[in-house]
Image 1: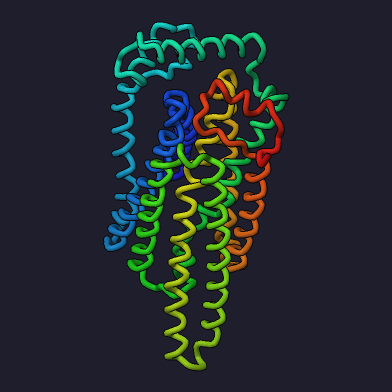
Image 2: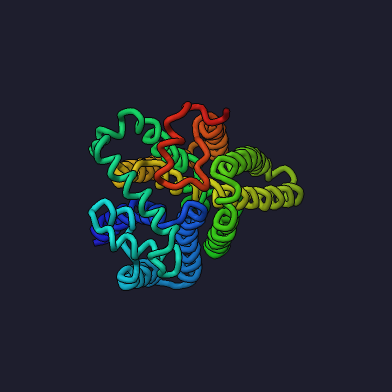
Length: 377
């Protein structure tokens, strides 16, 4: 039953993780699109934090309720979503694509001008959306194969690459297997490990807020570049601290008091580095990993393209989640060092190939991607 439930849950999460960023991107104005899509990532961080908090609370329970209660509570947000979805308007771009022009005008009026569908800015945006969709129908097919053709090939590689690289930041290794790391650096009790994990989730929540507030001002490229550099540095320090702790642990019989003091200091510093890596991810790769694929594709191909990019995310997630415990056990600090090297590759890719898209309408993305593939010029 547990496996069957996880299968159904996986289907639901797969659908939602593909549709939600696309819906937010299509309904948000260009100047606030980054903020709107970042709210999805913030909601995810709240879910992670609440899950860690519930796990911490349930760690004091003895018996089957210790695992049944966290599983059962998952139905609460599902019910809330089910009943609030009826209040959500259709995407204006979907409405135009299906020839519901008057409905699209009314929705744009609700989203942009507090219900004033006749406002000039609403009429202008509707005209641009309609012209773009008509042009794409006349000049572009909408098959999956077209994602690999010019000029969509570059966007497909970037979209899939963003989702792939987001997972290979190692964030899920830290979020899912941080208890293993905490044990390796000296934490022993279930409660202390669960508490550190709950704090980890809280750091994730708080550190996503700067992206919500300022990503449309900072831009996507600077946010990712700064976040990636921070992650590289903190991973390097964490790997060296973990290596140092393993050395101290092997010599603990030589001078117990001094070794214990040094071990505690290294352990505290290591936990701090975990939190700093999570914080650096939360304001950069967390929101941008979902934002960029949701905004770079043409209307005619967006749904298909995001289904592919999201699938890439979950495939990469599966690989990282499957291999991390094995590699942590076998290599420990070497896996963390490897993540820092992977992030150096991510930094190079972002610097060379990811163009800036802040403030641009979805209909203007063709202009961005018709130019040179080099983004740093």
